[in-house]
Amino acid sequence: MTTPTVTTEMLHAFVDGHLSDADRARVEAHLATHPEQAAEVADWIAQNDALRSLFPAPDQAIPLPEIPEAANNPRAPWRMVAASVAMLGIGVALGWAGRGQVPVDPAPLDVAGLVQEAMVAHAVYSADPHRPVEVAASEEALLIRWLSNRVGEQLSAPDLRANGFDLVGGRLLAVAEGPAAQFMYQNADGVRITLFAVRSDNSMMAEFQFRQNGSTNSFYWQDDHLRYAIIGDLPRNDLAEIATRVYNTLI
Image (cartoon, rainbow, N blue to C red):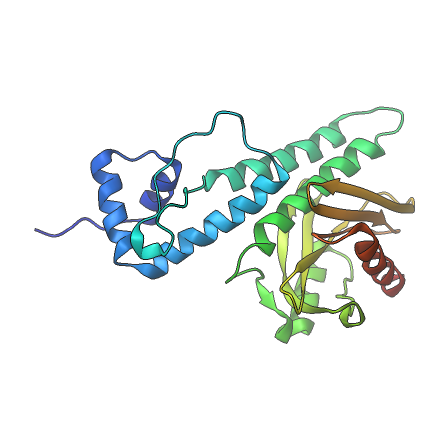
C-alpha cells in the first residue's frame, strides 16, 4: 500500500494545529525522514519568532505540536505560519485606514501604517537564513533596474560599507501605497538592516521620524518622490548614523 504524500498544505495545517491525530503522526514521521523540509519549517519558526518580537502573543497561547527528533530541536514549539500573513495584513489595513481618513493632518496615521508595513517586512525577511532576497547583490544593476521599473521611480542601493554593512540584495514588496522596494544589508556579525522605499504622491519634504518597536528601531523620511524607512535591531544612534548616510547619498 502506497503511503499518501505529505503536501505543503499539510505542513501548514500541521503548524497551525489543524490536523487529526493520525495525520499529525504521519507528518511527524515524514519530517523525521526529510531533514530538508524539517529545516524549511524551522525557517518559518524563525520568521514568526521575529514577528512575535514585534507583536506580543496573546495571554492564552494555542498549544501546538512539537518538532520531531530529526529537526534537531525536539522540544521547540511550532509557530503558526499564518501569523506572518496576519501581521502583514495588519500593516496593509493600517495603511488603507490612513488613506481613508480625512483629518486636518493625515500624515501621522499614514506614516504609522507605512512604517508598520516596512517593519513587518523587515521582521519576516531579515530572519530568513536561506532566501532573504529575490535578487542578490551580485546582480545589483539588474536589481536596481527591476525595482525602479516596478516602483516607478529611479532607485539606488546606497553603499554602507563605511558603516560595516554589505548589500545582500533586495526584493519587491506589495504594500498599501503600491509596489515597494526592500534592500537588505548585513554586517560581519550577521546583523541585517533593510532600506524600504515606496513612491509618494506627496511632494512635501519630511524630516526624520524615529519609531521603535521592541528591539527594532526605524527612521522614516520622504523626498519629492519617494518615502523611505531604514530598519534594524541596532541602537538608535547607530541607526541614525546609517540613516543620515543613506539620506545624503540619495539627495
